[in-house]
Image 1: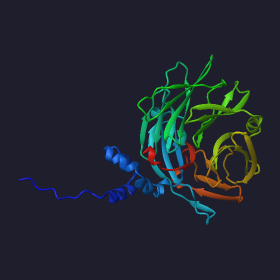
Image 2: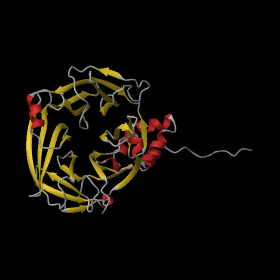
Image 3: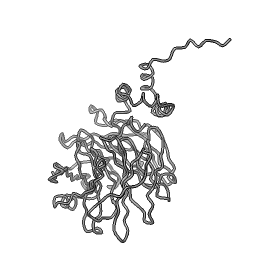
Image 4: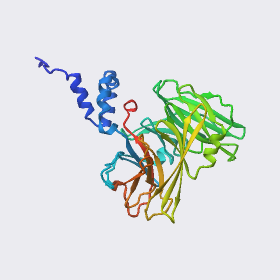
Length: 371
């Protein structure tokens, strides 16, 4: 006689509560179990629980690279304002050999990192540092090496890759949508011929911005790719040219409170100060820029090329991070509106002799849709 199974199914609300307390990798595996499990993760009830997790709050993401591999860490982005120096731990997430993903990292874009070149075969790869999952993408066929960037459509909830091919005969722009059955490349019409992007892109409110080199180093302009409509244009007015030509070096695109920003900085090693030049695109249609300049006194005792701007937080704080593993490893929070400076030490990234390269990214958080 077979024994009766008197066990009752786990109630949905309890199951969702268990999932909300599980690791990101466990949630990802659960979603792959069946269509029913996947539908639970997409439901509004679990989405609300997921957004209350500490890991969905903005964090600093660090990519530490040496000659062989990348190692990924993250730390809380909002330090305690009651202390002049705070020590914050860094959580390790995953490591990747460079022969799998290459030497360049772009992003993060809505929870995902983008590697435009996978090793030597120029195949792009997307990565979720929280789940440790990788996906190798389909590369466009061309005898010329393409340059590609990842963007996200907020309305259609789709990731798209913009690939630019430059040849002696001109440039071609192609787009591919991820997560669909048809991953073929579509050619995008662009009325301005340009070289591939020379800086990493940034996706803000469904628009992918990137700095391009027009007419072979004679002029720098910003390309704007609307991820949803797949239309490509350039910020071409004189104000754009002035914003780039008058900036210091280096230059980085940032998200300044939901608007495109261009920030550059220079270091005066004799006075131990960092000078920032910040341009904010106040009106995208009229292409009106607002320029601000700040001077940050920082005594570090290290070389002037040891720091880079990681980005700007949602509250407007400029985060400056070390770009190599030093001891101590420091991150500075500069609030230009309050004229305050916060210094944070991260022991998990310290090394006395290991000068591995460090890339820092702001506002990184777990994203349910990419799990």
